[in-house]
Length: 237
Length: 294
Ligand SMILES: Nc1ncnc2c1ncn2[C@@H]1O[C@H](COP(=O)(O)OP(=O)(O)O)[C@@H](O)[C@H]1O
Ligand SMILES: [Mg+2]
Image (cartoon, rainbow over all chains, first blue to last red; front, side):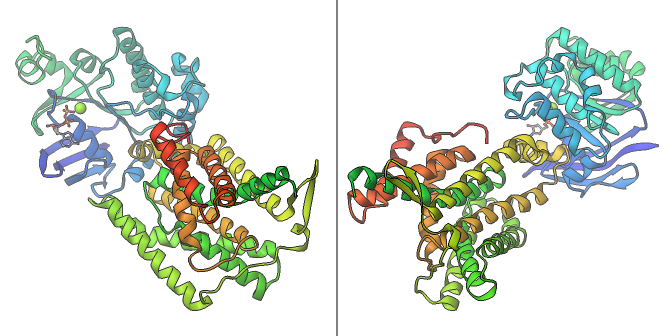
């Protein structure tokens, strides 16, 4: 079943037109990665899906129902959960409170203790305030907060950005578990290796428009695409 | 009367004033913390609370407790309507703050006129119930008027209740998370419109309680809201926006400065609170408890 379908999606910040007639399909249990260089519109795409972009047009359907005009919290309640780029851990809530809050807000949550088992690092930091965590710990908490809500569609915005390699490995392990557990995932990544490793299908966008889509296997052999749109192998970032 | 007991009496008077002021300032601060709305009509909500208590006690039931309950309920409903019918329309506008100011100030003018029209401009007051009259001796020749003690205890209970809800309940976590990152709270599923109305209702209810408790303590007239809202803003600035403990400490401080100040220089009760505000703003611009957790 198609979990998410985007057709002719346009998005704007004030007068800036950012997404141009974007199209995308995410099928049940897919792991789709959205690739593109910095500023291509990856975050804006996720914001259009979650309803947090100031203005969106076109058709966004979640499990067959239009959500283009649906309020942010309603989209969330239906099971679409975003781990945002900036982590957005609540600074004045403890680690435990961040997780409890997410648990209580979800329609069909995962057990809190079970969630902490996935994140041993967080388990030891339950009483710490969000603002006192390191970047890696905040990212773990942000992912934990989404997972405890037992998402139907998990949106990850550059989950590895700014993380030390060991933490990236931890994250890969946790997310690998999630993927194995039949969660549908749409994620953006600059870390192509991570994206190709976890993903099954990929979309490449540039300046807010579709450029390419296909399987991760195909993409591996397309150095031209990787070089042109993802700055891989050119030494740039 | 000795100087010693005179000073004590002024301090107790001040704490009594501060306790009612706290109820207004706490609601004002809560609403600002969560909704980013500066509710200028908060003072008239307090005034409505006082009038509802008077009307209910004098002409309907004769029970002080029911009068207070009625005041809280009526003002809560008025507050809920104010937010869900009017203020809600202004969220996200370009000139949001200015529009809020104009809208809430318009309500101040309208409600004051309506109250003056219905009740006249003369002062009214309420006799406290029998059990709350007289004084409670504290020993050492000092005593506290029973009603004043009651108001102080109520304020402390409200503070403790607010802090407990904020810290230990799901609603508290929702309030704290939304006041620090509204969008992330919505992404997790917080129903923000409903939360806003709820917070406004609670803030208004606190003002209604304060007003009802003021009815037996001071002369109630249609301009009651004006004096309290200014003081409540001073309290919130001194205590730090969004901090209940700050609002409490600030309110008690302002209450004492007002009571003692008007004893030192007759008629200058407002001088010292503003002086305190300026001093705090110069030395600690975020307020005494600003930047702390709500
Ligand atoms: N809040 C904003 N206001 C205006 N322009 C924005 C805003 N956020 C992003 N943009 C612009 O939108 C474009 C796409 O940004 P974004 O979706 O964040 O890209 P990506 O996530 O692919 O790096 C960029 O040109 C960026 O400058
Ligand atoms: Mg981005």
